[in-house]
Length: 424
Image 1: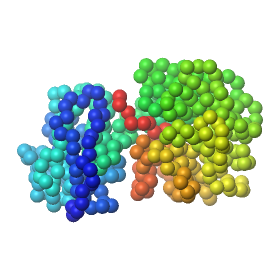
Image 2: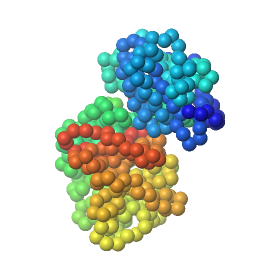
Image 3: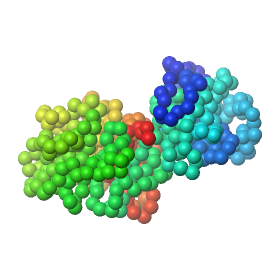
Image 4: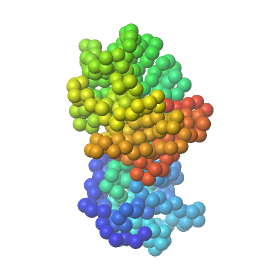
């Protein structure tokens, strides 16, 4: 890669974990062609777990879609593992702007980043980590390291240290952003439409038997019914401050949105649907507005309203006909777009609408695609698709259109919710 101009300001890395040991260097600036992705080589490390750490970091950087991961062939990897220092001529010929190396230590992991153009060590950092045998915790530290690394290289923090909630086989599960560590969160029952709180320490979901909204503390491992009773309770989400839950409730005709504090006291009605269904709330990042699906026009469209339920406004252009159907809105973390699925040619496809000019953009065309959920970087979306036959979760990079399958198996997976960046 021809190196022409600097990334901009030197980038400072924030500590991702309280268990981090030392920071010997915290700034790195790379030069690369505008509009291109810097080439990165992940060098082999030495010690137990080095190969696993290298594989995870390579995958995390690749899935981040902001750098070009240059994979060494077997011979080059062997030579690199035997060398005492990086081979600058080889790295330069490969087009690498930087090389990184993760080495297991007695207490965790050691990260080194090398600037190929300057032929210097740009950053070194140590991370405390549990033993390799504690796979989930060990992998979490490697993911956090990857996110630090992506921020140092590109200026944007990665999303490797995130998870996705989803439904499968009458349970709620979590899966790491790279598709590993599938873990059941609930027992078998009727849980649906799970959502994270802002810190990733709690989730909320609805149940049908009994009917209600459940709040589950992931740290303590305890659940409690927040509200419940007759009728249906569906599609709960936390408020941006994490202190309340907004959900949809109805007893006879139609459903409306309600707000209930975690401190108790029942639900307060927000929307006035007059017998129509009003579901799937999603907050703007500043917490001032709520996007939701409403059928008040005779079919499902996307609306917004103030967080207190006032000033409702139709967001999507009103369509007519039996195929008019827009649902499952999710507000992007940067506040610029709302993603949703829309009926097109007899199936569902993902769309975004700009909050600035209300311009529409179609994101998918292969198979049936629905229920989008934004990653915290505002660039990636997870969604349900049947493009391989059985409904599974997929991840889409909205800038390049690249997609990858997140879940696998014979059982369908659906209703994904991407976590915030996690710290534990």
